[in-house]
Structure formats: C-alpha cells, structure tokens
Length: 331
Image (cartoon, rainbow, N blue to C red; front, side):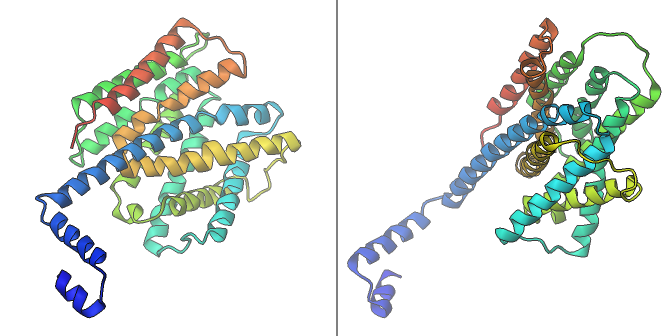
C-alpha cells in the first residue's frame, strides 16, 4: 500500500511512514471494538450530563412561572406564551444556524403525538392543582420513573437491580420533598389528572427512546416541532385567542422569556438527548432532579421552610443519581 502511494502520488518518506503506522494499527486485534467502547462511554457521559441538565432546568419552572401567576395571568395563557416564545426563538436559531427544519409527513405525525403528550403533561398537572394540594400532586407525578421502567419491560428492556434501587430511592426522595402537611381531602379528579400528567410524560420519554424515526431527527428539530404543535394546541384551547389574557408587564415578559428558554427549550432538548443516549428508564431517574431544584429555589428565593423530611428527600435523590451513574456496568 505504501509503495503504491509513493509511486502514484509521490508522497514524502514521512507520509509513507505515517501510512505504515496506519497499516499496523489496523492489524491490532479488536481495534474497532476498542474504538466502539470509547465512543459508547463518551455517549453515556453526555447522556447522563444531558439528563442532569434537563432535570435541573425543568425545576426552574417556579422561579419564572410563580411571579407571573401571582400577578394574575391564568395558567392556559401562561403556557401558550411559554411554548409560543420558545417556538419562535428556536425557529430563529435554526434558520440562522441552518439547522434541519424539513421533515417527512411520517415524522410530522409522530411529532404531533409527542407535542400533544408534552403539552398535555403541563395542562393536566396545572389543572390538578385546582383539586389537590401541590405536594400530593408532585408525590404522585414523580412515580413516573416506575411507570417508564414497567412500560420498557414490555419491549424487553429490563432495568438492572442498581437501576431499580435508584428508581425507588429517587421516588421516595421526591415524595418526602413534597410532604408539607396541611388539611384537605383527596379529590379523585385531582388524582386522575396528575396520573394522566405522569402518563403523558412517560409516553413521551418511551416514544423518543423506541422510535427509530424520532431517533433519526436532530434534537433541535424534534424539540421545535413539539413546541410548535403545543402552541397550536394551546391556541385552539383558548378559543383561538378569544380567552387569551395579556402578559401583565415588562418584568413578567422577562419571566416568560426565562420560562421559554430554560425549563422549556433547554430542558426539552437535553431530555431528548439523554433519552437517546442512556435510555428512557435512566433518563426518568435523572428527571427527579426537577423537584430537588424546585425545593432549593423555593427555599432560597421564596423563603419556604427547609424541614427534616426535605433534607432526607434531598439525600435520597442525590444517592439515587450518584448510585446509578457510579454503578454503571463497564463495557
């Protein structure tokens, strides 16, 4: 090979030596397998990092959403502005950066399903708050990692015992974070709505993980169409704009912008990336960082009490995440 390159291309002796090295490397046993292992490890690291970023940024919802709601903006209007602004920002970025926007009709059909599921998750959760305390609602919602694991088992993707330990520790931690006491009865309508919210989120994660059509799409494209479908859905639910209320003031618009960027765009892009890289079950465990982040924001920003059960819940969630990552099987 080297001799031929010298003859036809007149390569220097240094280049010839380089080609000899390449020939030698190719003869190393299992060299391709070694490269595949290295690539897989990098993919796992990115997947875990993306899942952590997704969980943390989703947890910033109260930071931007609560101040706007406290000024009188209704939930449906807030969600429409949230998804609408996120859609416009992502479209502008994709046009400037020349990212893929065109998709097939088959992909659009799946995107429509994902958009409805993602938006349905938000709508049903906020509606559930009308019937049951937010702590109970959060406790029920964050059993969704178990729902993800059970659904994935039907597709012959069985979690390891380490992942099951992380799931139950994380769910227990999320429940402890949500227990704040208080009176009131449990309304079955609230339970039904929050279970529906968790199921929507579960199905979103599972479809992203299993669909080869979705996996072929860039994460930016996937996220853009989810938001676009969500915006159209929310606009239709508002009576095609008849029941939309305006954002109260400039500060509220800044909060809407923050809501659109961090817990919406970035959180969803990294959620899709993590699901593709490490799978639906592990991504759902990493998502339990969301209530943990919300608790810290509530304590530091809104001066909510940091009680013993909250401290134990934080410890359990951190244990769940670290245990899952550190006990990952070596390839």
